[in-house]
Image (cartoon, rainbow, N blue to C red):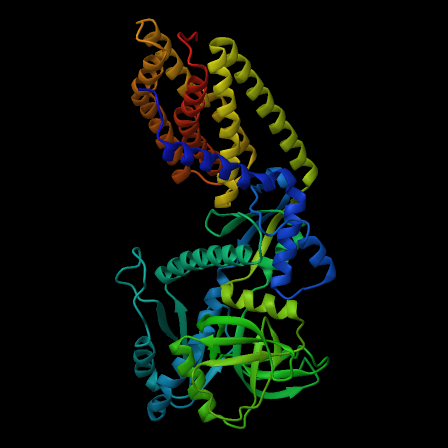
Amino acid sequence: MLQIETWKRVLIWAVLALGIVLSLPNAFYTRVEQHNDAVAAIEKGADTEENQGLAAQWPDFLPSGLVNLGLDLRGGAHLLAEVKVADVYAARMEALWPDVRDVLRPERETVGTIRLLPSEPGELRVRISEPAGMPRALELVRGLAQPVVSLTGAGSTDIQVRAEGDQIVVTLSEAEQLATDERTMQQSLEIIRRRIDEVGTREPTIQRQGEDRILIQVPGIGSAQELKDIIGTTAQLTFQPVVGSTDNPDTAPGVGNEILPYLDREGTYAILEQAPVVTGEELVDAQPSFDQNGRPAVNFRFNPAGARKFGDYTADNIGSPFAIVLDGEVISAPVIQSHIAGGSGIITGNFTIEESTNLAVLLRAGALPAGMNFLEERTIGPELGQDSIDAGKVAATVAMVAVVLFVIASYGFFGFVASVALTFNMLLIIAILSLIGATLTLPGIAGIVLTIGMAVDANVLVFERIREEARTAKGPARAIELGYDRAMSAIVDANITTFFGAAILFMLGSGPVRGFAVVLMIGIVTSVFTAIYVTRLFIVMWFERKRPRSIEI
């Protein structure tokens, strides 16, 4: 008998109502977006009257999720960056010097005095005063070598050690360079992604291109320079011993030392040991806070290895200054008052609340392992995006009108029911996109237009089946029931194969291709739901009210 249980009716109406509510904010896009931005700013501490007013533009009891617009619809910034992987080689060699020094010191009777020499980037040169002890020195330094951690470098070590007269020359092996390049690129991709996501932008496109380049596209960013400010800050945090201070930046610091400016003392420079005691790579957390005087600061915490090194150094150097260096500037150089155990501390300086928050974000995301050269940068204006949106609206409207006219002309009242279900289908697509935070691109709009065309396929199968069953004189109720039941398998088969194709596009594609695939997969699910359940509910409700003796399709 043609009927639908009450709980199913309630569930179908609940899904449709939820779709309407979730898609509603997109009808007031600018207002809701300003509300969301203001709420985010207030949560970060910018509780101003302006933000309070913007936050009040949209009721808090209503959902505020929006369909994120892609770069081609909203405008934004486009960057092509080249990662300077050679910088990592130099940093590795600088960090190796303390280990080489410590391993050679116990053998001074054999190798003589040890002296660090100025070296080319990517190599470490150490002079010993007793050339006769060179074989023993090479043996000790080669003992520092570690296996290369990569599939292609299996069986190789990370450093090569050779002698040139009375000098020991250490360089990275070719296998380690390849492995380092791969790690550097993967780390850069992940850090850029974390930085961009954490500062509140939506659905960036971050892809590796070639061996050492990264493509970055972020919708909603006002300019390419704004994006460069977010990405280009390396946030290299180090804790380095202080050797002295000077007013002349041209002072010779000595081998193994460097001169860096103080952030808040103009004209004063610190002489520091180049080899840091602890680096930002050993940080596990950083949060904005306030110091004992109520000024903005950043709390930090090291991992166990960093905490041990930090604690050992502070225990052995009580009374000595200790510089906290961020991106080549000395933020502060406090004197160590006591042993700092536990691996946690606080960074103070002349910060604003916004600066301390941004610094915590950058430190949590991690330091970029290498600098970047920006080879290409451009800003896509919102005007171009608005043209694309307008063109997409025209295409969707034309497709919708054409489909509605076709189904009504072909199936009469049943076609009208299918058209109403098609409207709910569009609302459900927008609601799901808003709920999951997916990004809508121009290819995504193409996916919506394609979904409109595909959405009536299931209804065509059902209506044609009902038409065939009605000819057997089984009665209208039985014809409708059999029409839906017997068309089910064909509908499911057709849509499952299309869904698999869209899933493969999503897994293997990138950028706009994935946006198209996401919309298509969502559209397939909502189309099947509206075609099978929503239209059936409407037709059953009509049949219960009218009780026709025959039906014409």
